[in-house]
Image (cartoon, rainbow over all chains, first blue to last red; front, side, top):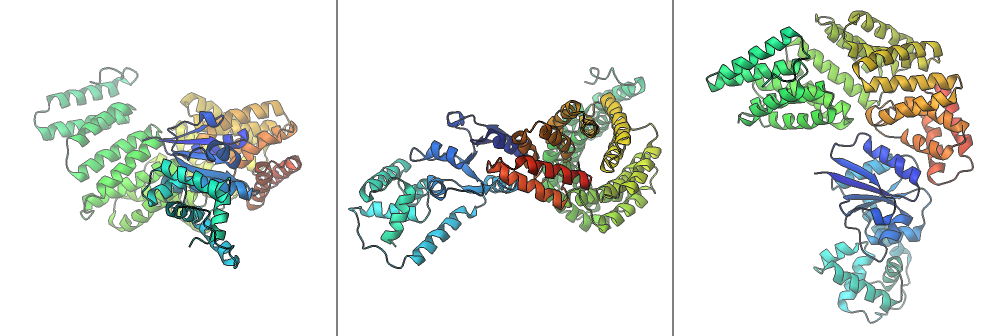
Length: 204
Length: 391
C-alpha cells in the first residue's frame, strides 16, 4: 500500500527541501508531494506536513483533518496559534530550524503508530497552569448541560474532537455541534479560549 | 523460452543457455525438473537476464512448501535485484528471505549457512537503501553465526558486511581505529582467495576507511593497489577506485589531479551507463570549475550532478558546495537555503562539527525568514568548507 505525504507550507523553498529530505532514503511505497494551496491537498493524503498558518487556515473550526498531521514550526512560534492547531487535532510538532532531522524522526514515528509527546506535553502545561491558579473564579456553569460539561472537560484535557467523539461514544458531528453550543454559552470564539475558561472553571 | 533476448550474448553463452533450456524441457521427474530449472535460472542470471532468472526462481518458490528452500529462492531473487542495482526491490526481497529462514529452527548446518548468506546479502541491500538499524541487526546475527561458518568466501562476505556497518554507523566520517584494524584483517583474509575482484574489493575497503578518516595519502595507496590488481578488467570496480582517487585529490585541493581522475571516471561511466559515478565525477568537475571561478560551468555541472545524487548517494554534498558558491556570486541566498538545509539530513554523510554548526546557524535564520545576515552566513559556510577540505 502506498503512503502519500503532502506538504503544505507557505514557504515554497522550505517545502521543496523537505520533499528532497523525505524522498532521500524513503521506502519505495512512499510518495511525497507539495500542495500548491489548501484546495489541492488530496483526500488520499495519509500524512500532512503543514506550517501553522497553512494548517489553521485549512482546518480551524471548519472540520478536522482526516489524516495524520505533523505541524512544522520554527523556533519562533505563536503560542495562541499553536494552541489552536493542537486542539484542531494535530498529531505531532517538529521544529525545522535545525534541518530535517526532527521532522523525519516524527514522520517515522507517526507512520509506525508510535505515540508522540505532543499530547503529553500539552497535558503537563495544563496541569502546571492549574497548579499556579490557586484562586479559581467563582463557579458558574453558564447553563451548560451535563454532556456539554463532559465535553468541555475532555477538551481541557487536550483531547482532540475525534478523540472526544470516541471517548463519549458520540458521533463526530454531534460533538462538533456540542462544541459550538459550548462556545456560545461560555462566550468564547476559539478552542484555546474555551480550554483556558474550562481550566478556570475547574471542571475536575 | 530463451530463444528471444539472447542474441547479444556470445555464441558459447547462447549455446549453454539453449542446452540448459532443452534439458529442462526434457526433464521427466519433478526432482529433475527442479534441478534443471535451478541450473537455467543461475545461467540466466550470470548472463544478465535478471528478469527471466527471477521468473524461474519465483516459480520454484511457488511449488515448494519447505521454508529453507523457499528462503534460498528468495535469496537468489535478492541477489538478482542487487545485480540489477535495484536496491529497493532487493531490500524488500531480503526482508522476505529473512522472514522465511527465521521460520526454520536454524539448528542444522544447512540452515545456518543459508541464514548466514541471507544476512550478508541483506546487509548489502539495506546499506544501499540507507537503513542503518537493519544493517546493525544483521551484523549482530552474523557475529553469532560466524563460528559455525568454515567457508572462507563466506567469512570474507561477513567482513565486508561489517565494513558496511562501520561506514553507516559513523556516517562516512572519522571512522575509529577499530574500523582500520577490521579493514586490514578483511584485506588479509581476502588476499588468501584467488579472486582478483574479491581482493580489490577488500583493498578498496581499506582505502575508504582511510579516506573518510581524512588520511588521504594513505587511502591513495590502497586505491592505486586495487587499480593495479584489476588492470583493465571490471570497469565497474575501476570506476569506484577512480572516483575516490578524485575525491581524495579534491579534499587536498589539487585541481589538476581531481580533473584528471574525474574525466577518467566520466569516460568509463559513460561507456557503462553508470549514473552514480558519472554524477559524482560531474560534481567534482563543478568543483574544478568553481576553483577556477568559472561560475557558469560550475553551476551547470553542480545542478546536473545534484539532480541525480540527491536521490542516489549520501555524497550529494559534493555537488552542493560548488553550487552554494555559485549562488553566492548571484546573492541568491534564498535558493541556497534549500541546499544548506538538505546538508543536515541525518542519513547523509556527516560533515565536520564546525562546518555543521555554521550550516545550522544559517538554516535557523533561513527557516525563520531572517534574511539580513544570510549572505554573510553563507560566506562563513563556504570558508569553513574550504578550510576543512569539504568544499
